Image (cartoon, rainbow, N blue to C red):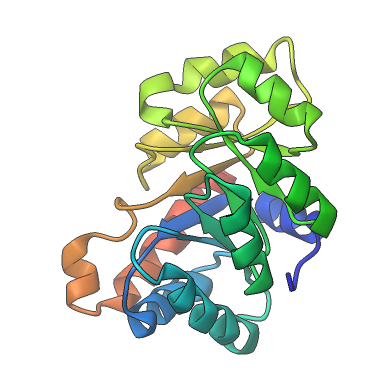
Length: 219
């Protein structure tokens, strides 16, 4: 069962508006990365459903987070159908993220009171997702659509909460361009976790990068 309710997840996102996006087949590496992010001030973490037996890794990370990162909301990403969403919610997912919007995923997330953040690439899609109860919509892919899209959609739909993912970088220039446009939060993957840093188990580098990126977001 989810440890954080819908309001708790939204409040955490508002307070620390950066969501690291990560997958690793080794549960011990995944735990170390989550803890490094947590130590850097991160309070929402998206583990992506990318590899074989990813749900088994998630189950281990979920138990670890409950013990070692009590204020963290742990979510699952890359979800495209309801059965997979249900599986991860059973393993403790606090929120569900997808690259696309599937109304059937919205239904089962709503039933459990778990936030669903669907990937949307158009204003109409965001509108349909909002009608289905999605408080936050993911603008994806962000690097293709750009900050101007965010600014443009917020003019007629100022109530929209947009999380942008794809091409977001942990630099002041990049993050300030998104937040000036009006995003609610950003999702960040490979730019936050260079392969060489993971390979070297250099967790302090990740902690420092998270601290720095969050400071840029809050500016």
